[in-house]
Amino acid sequence: MGTSLLSTAEKNALGDVFYDLHQTFGRNITIYQTAVETVLVTNPDNNFLYQQAAMNSLTSTVIQSGVYLARILYGKREDLVPFAGGGLSQNQIRLSEGEVRIQLDPTGSAYLAGCERIQFDGNTFNVVTDPRPHGLFKPDFNTYYLKKVQ
Image (spheres, rainbow, N blue to C red):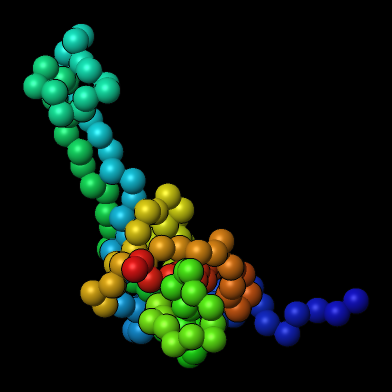
């Protein structure tokens, strides 16, 4: 039976270097979760069919967002997908549907779990994959792939 060439303390020290890299090369992204609607004043005559009625309950909508560090990599290749309803043999206007890969630490990954949208570099993105854990000795970071919202 073999033994590890590195002690647990050495493994932890080497794994912590990735947190330094994340702090050095990470850029701020804003993650938006589903808005929370709070009822401020209830009215028993609330009309659920017509939400804009004057007699409805008074509610407040609070947008939940957080800013986290992410390492961002834009796709090397950007496929151009044609608009629906046309054959590929004709000249067409095409949509750019590039992918973006981000890597988040555990706190950013936990917040991303219930997200609606992500914003950075002046663009808005949707998450299109499940998290892919990775790390040197233990999975400390998660990778996600995003698509730009058109």
